[in-house]
Image 1 (cartoon, one colour):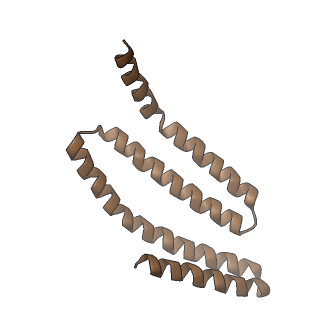
Image 2 (spheres, helix red, strand yellow; image 1 turned 90 degrees about the vertical axis):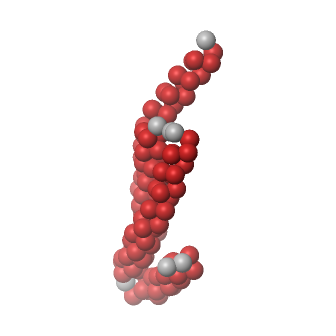
Length: 128
């Protein structure tokens, strides 16, 4: 599938959801959720190309594997939190979506702490 195909799936789902909203509002939410899951899992299949590229970069510059794993975790946290937040907002639960975004940001901060500590240690070496 291409970006155009994914865009068509999204647009058709939204148009159908708007039409279903007049009949039964929850059906529209389920339809958008289903389309979102299709797009989400298709996006995961594209992640393989990203991982392969990161592995090539790692072989060129000899990065510690831990840093790349942290980067992948951060990408995953961002994508999942944004997806869940968007679904909550579309369903009319904006405050819950906001809480998911805050939790995602805090999770990214927690996951990135080893990188911050390594940066501080590097700066300490240069400052001495």
